Image (cartoon, rainbow, N blue to C red; front, side, top):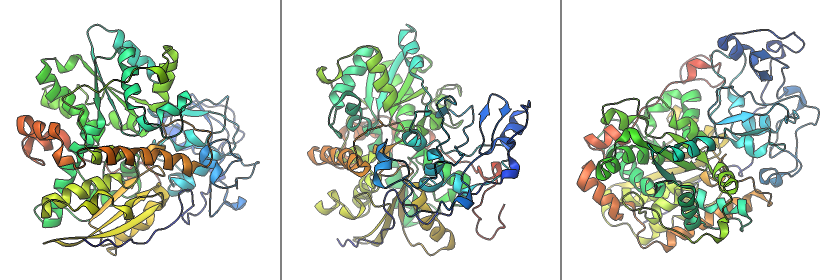
Length: 554
């Protein structure tokens, strides 16, 4: 086995060479009286300005004349961990904020709290490069990948996740509904911060106990479906490498909904590279309303499936029209794989609201059937974790038992924005991989894939710097610096991996059982029906700056 650590570029909060976002002031309505506009008209006119109801307000944004190109765009004076990594560089007089569609399912803004500081513009244009990559006039969409990083940067709390906690309580109180909850890998190493515990404390048992006290009927672990994802995504990768399926290399990961939507907006020509495997959340949602429903003799229509996620973009993912595979399987397309998504912050809010003494709750275990997980499943919330987990099983499928060195794949670990490595697999040769976190780091890799100069076999993308552990729905820690917070959460998940008796997804006993009793073979007919999906070209909905290969700028 030969490892070669490849090129690394940019630190976690760096600008990655992005050009400043430019605002065409002529598209605004800086002094006009309020006018009634249609939704289409609103989307065209709102731009970077404030929108209250159907009224178009002041236009503002990142002004190129202000000289906002920076090597490190952390911004701010130190109210949230992301801003501690560097001093601010956003002029205090700037009039800017990100546009948020009133129908956005993930994030919202309280205009009374907004001070037009520009921090949301800073993170959106420089760290996630969404605003950086489109311009006015808008067509019929306000581009947003729903990552929620703006909720972590906003100093006043004006931008927050959409609060859906009341929907969970309503479902729990409904005697006709069977409420099933799943929890993501990253929530357990961040939730404790909301209750005064040290950063990175693993509160898995207390989290399960709290959900049980709140009154849900079943609690499953998304770590299980992380292993399920590896079985599907890893098998797909092997089939691409061996030429069994005629889809292009490199294969790009598809479990991060913020990254997927970013690709659909700005790199739609690369959609064929995306793995067709659904995310762990939506895979488990499909299994709950098919496999679990059948095993428990419960009508899928009466199951209310909830996911606790570190990610605001998961709220968007849950309502994607195609995420109804369990409904199609049950003969009723109105049945959704996931009915509701709550963030880690929302769960903390709910626990406090019902008055639970969280830190002193006797720990409880997840319910069986869809909860066992390997160490590979545990590290899904870490940048590089999906790659490391997939490589372990891909090696097994290609060459047999993986060496112990693959259980600690150092080249893909750490907080660097881009990491590359090369693995030598017997009978296959060199397999080249890359890992990207923070969307501003993605362009270099994606452009090389476009022009054919990138020779990777597999690339992992995560929208949020550091991965899901610093997702837009995680606690707003006040502990500086931000990298220390991320590292503590990451180390906690790696510790869970190291302590696991099973560290390979394909050795998970419940995974073996579900394929034997229900799914059949990975990438087979039923898995493709329930666990795989397709993607949408969203580029036609916006005026993009990025050019497609061989085409004119739109």
